[in-house]
Length: 267
Ligand SMILES: Cc1cc2nc3c(=O)[nH]c(=O)nc-3n(C[C@H](O)[C@H](O)[C@H](O)COP(=O)(O)O)c2cc1C
Image (cartoon, protein in one colour):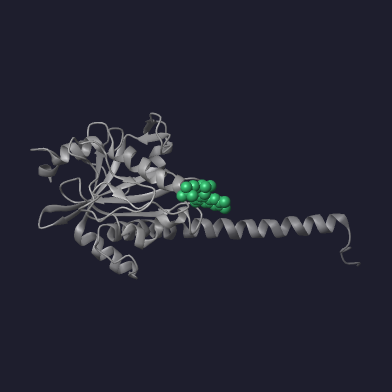
């Protein structure tokens, strides 16, 4: 009996189809099988960023998964906040809350008013990470997101318990140009932030990235050095903070947190 004609169109199409089928099964099972691992890694990655911006790990420190988990669980409590009223939301798992996903879901978010950070939607609920020491909040970590020149920049801002003094900032995901706007992730630039003030005496957001250099925090509490050759990214950072610290973002929560009998005392 003659074998298949290896050069026939039928054989080639059949072979290619079978090969695609095998590959599709392989890729699909890998994606499904690794999904849980991916989710765990995503969570660990976020926890590591929170630890670092809160000063519970050095920026360049290597942390194993076990170290991230134990340090995080020892000192950090994630809480959900109603962004409009600034009140805590109890009875929901703040760790499992996916703020990015909620922001895209029309039933869990609303359109943002026009803003320079070009944030288009705000979630109804926001996560706040609290560093707790001896039953007291030592640091508040807020997720921030806004646009630079080319991209959406994702980061965290850490505030001291006065909900005003900046304890740290980090941008961990963005598409700005390396060496220009991409310097938002440079630990040296991020080190210029601690000790500066987010709000002025009348309670308005005052912190901004200027063009050029700022003095030390005591001299220039509301100013941070601009990123050279990246004025648009720098402006994006200022606008991002203005948005998330303002009344459409975490502003109402921060006011309650500072106030007597406010969120701070309801630990
Ligand atoms: C290839 C290329 C990449 C750039 N990337 C950025 C960037 O990431 N962020 C930014 O603000 N400006 C970037 N710029 C510069 C802007 O076009 C603009 O000139 C700059 O923001 C002005 O900043 P300056 O006044 O500090 O020079 C880039 C320019 C070029 C040619």
